[in-house]
Amino acid sequence: MGYIHCCGALHKTRSFCLAPQGDFVMCEIDYLSKCPVCGHTVVQLTRIDKNDNISIIRKVNKKAKEFFSKLKKFILYEEKTVKYNRVNTGSFYLNYNEFGVKKRCYSNLKALKIGLNENKYLKLNP
Image 1 (cartoon, rainbow, N blue to C red):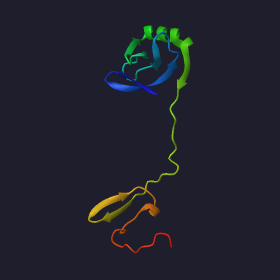
Image 2: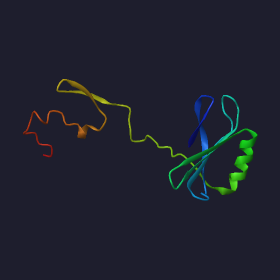
Image 3: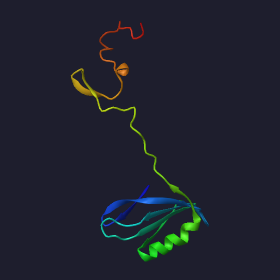
Image 4: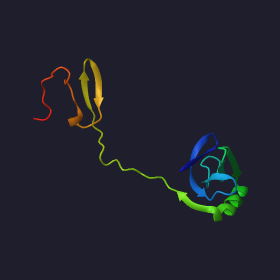
């Protein structure tokens, strides 16, 4: 998912990957159907050539709709964002004190090794 800067803010857009033409290595188009602030339709084409030069073409309103309809036949796929589930993570953190410094344990209790330097005869695997 791409972003377009319009009305002083970044707005989420639909991103499409285009078939590169000519000397271009990568072509990508971002489409904002309606800006939440001003209501404009914005289309931005970003291209990178073999020398890593970036060219940007930006169209607004009626010209943007015509520009997007011209480029529809070159669209390979739409880039979708992957939503990760936070299944295995919790919201509990173990606060502990190690040598006078207050710390927070983000991992499980098996990985927490408090006092190993103080007690060298401690057996971890009995």
